[in-house]
Length: 269
Image (cartoon, rainbow, N blue to C red; front, top):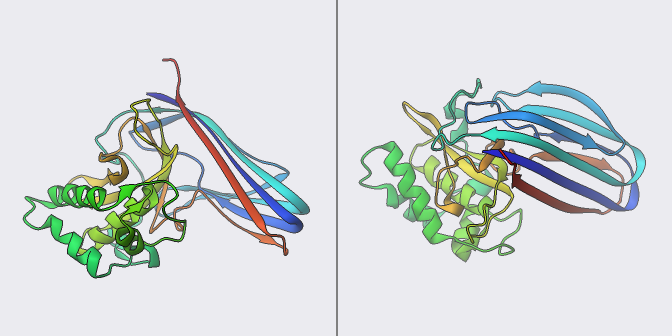
């Protein structure tokens, strides 16, 4: 499938700030499941800095904007060719060991309810079967409802609420997997809404779990599937903050407001 992305992030400040520094993970991953045909990242009045590939194989680009500045626009546009690998991250080059992703973070810390939910994997035929059972359990326990949670909601809080968005589903699955000894990580990216009548978030997130013999395999409890040709993978991390496509800091006292719009459409083949 050939997918076209148009992703705009607008930062506004009620008082001009002296400057802004950002770190971007906004370039699609290089692996057998996707090929970048064209891609650009533009930052209004931005000065590009260093570029490197981190241990997880993600391309990281730094940007700076000199102030005073009241508005910054980050625009991502491009076309990616995707194929369905049944969620397997085949051909992705990275040096970080799977054990790195056994680290507990604040959003993925387990509580009594999450530990109880992890029992859904009991009796699984193998680790892959256990992963599917955990993903199904998260989908059943946390209903998809936009606006029910915030960017700071933890997996335990989302489970207690019984509602959340893709970030909450990913955090919950990661928490369960790590609790039973499966390395797991958070993945940020895009999802093509194909008119099937279901609710989707074009800026999307899911989890990857480490499977012996297969490597990293993606699971998306929010849509009850493994990533297929509708998904574009950007990058990964221990949790949503660690894997954020854009991270940064502003120098000054201005209050920041954020507006994000993302469109993903299928190109004519």
